Length: 266
Image (cartoon, rainbow, N blue to C red; front, side, top):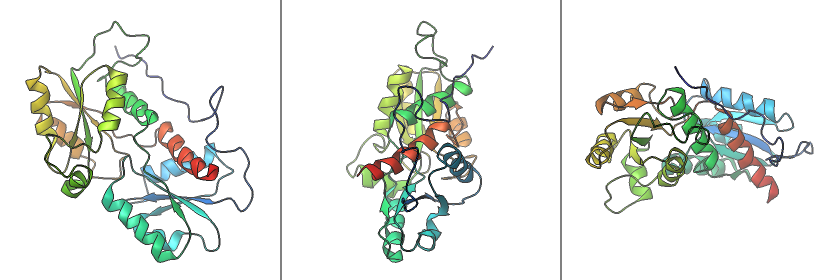
């Protein structure tokens, strides 16, 4: 019998938590431009829709990175929020180039992670597939369904080398998020790349050498960054279960709003 999973509310800022964006904004407030590395349909459109519902006071535009220069407003400030879970150097360079080519004074935020909300969403996605305890407080005495987690990302060799140019056993690009997720799960969490070395097989070998027999792959992906079946193939290759990508989880929409709100504060 699967345990119920309690997902974060899609209405950020309730109770004792401060709202990431003021409830009202002036008419000339900066436009929030969501920059998706790929298609603006599917999950990217769903995230934009959630942000609009949660924050109707914000003008939200969704655009592909390749079309960003044409999408930036003329004569008005804008905050560009990349729909990325980490600062992919290739995509971030494309965004910076597009803003420069547009001649606008748009501000580009950092990626959405690492952040505790991102680790929370990853935890929930694992729990939805029965690969993690659903409630880390109430179920402390219940044994975990897996022994360790592989935190999977994409970005290729260039991204791995950009984040850690010296030879390492595993990609360091996701280590902050890996630490946050490990703290929530009280399990070893190791980062690996889905599309380059050091990859998922190397991570699985390392974890199993340390005594972890049951593994799970947790994609630290929103969902538009790579082919839909890449995570499933990687997990099958190391005989591991896998969670679904983050998708339009409420925490992703909240992180978008926080990124925008932090620029308003400055």
